[in-house]
Image 1 (cartoon, rainbow, N blue to C red):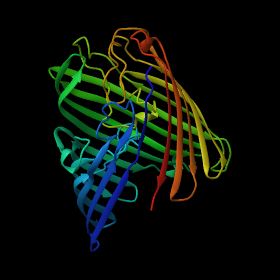
Image 2 (image 1 turned 135 degrees about the vertical axis):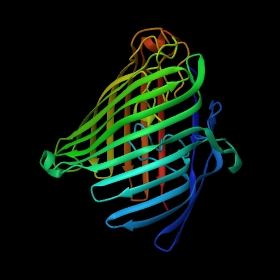
Image 3 (image 1 turned 120 degrees about the horizontal axis):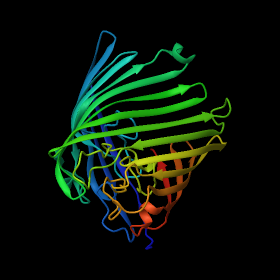
Image 4 (image 1 turned 180 degrees about the vertical axis):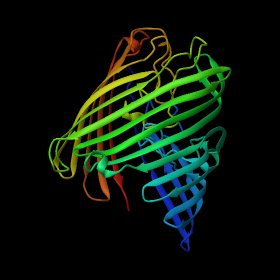
Length: 379
């Protein structure tokens, strides 16, 4: 295999203007170039000379005991489960969308309504990051604070959601067609004693061209703290199931899809995404000191449907994997260390080795290793 190495950095500059209590204007520029060896043609989210990352205005007020507001413009939008909508911290620049969102938030209930368009990122200056009018993300996310008496003092939150993702040109297999995908699901998260849970399930319906769409995702993660202190070791386990099928045989499309989720959850290298995926991963997190946290994990990965492909983090298939090889795709061993030197300075190191299995090796793919180091300084 050909090795590659790269270095990149990102600088953001923001301005926040408040006009009285109820009106605000916010702008943010970002610069994040990439350079190195054998980096190919990086996307605009990985290498961008300059872009307007956010530019919005919002208005807020209070009606009774409820905070209400609306925001219009380009914005970072992450109201939802991390595996479905996320900043994607492996990218140089954050995912931002353009449109409108409005919210109402009380002490135990909330609702967030939105209608947003994606951004097409170029590698150059401010002028090459236009709105992509062909990709539209809209819906409503609600939130319920569950009663603490439910499980003896538990702090749990339930976020039901209904979303629609529309894309004028989606490629599955050899076909490109318009897709309208509707998500109906819920996100349950919080603490139950020493347990921390993060559970998401959703059904995805709609149409892909003239074909019906019928897909599911069940994404379950949890940790158990082995002592009373926050620095006590934690045992973790996550299980993820995302349906697959229909991309290559013209039948009902069963490939699940996340709008813009946190794909490094499955592989730092971008090997996997919750499409045609079954994953099981135990982990252990230890904190040798108050400022250092180390997590080790080993993930076993299969595909739901062998006749369909193995899919990368950007939603594209590994060429030649559809119908080739077995159900096992790749095992992923990885280690992450986060050293919080001070409230403003932190370092993150990541190591990973991917052991290719028959679902990939039968198509000619091999093992792969990865190492990265980040420094973050806020001033």
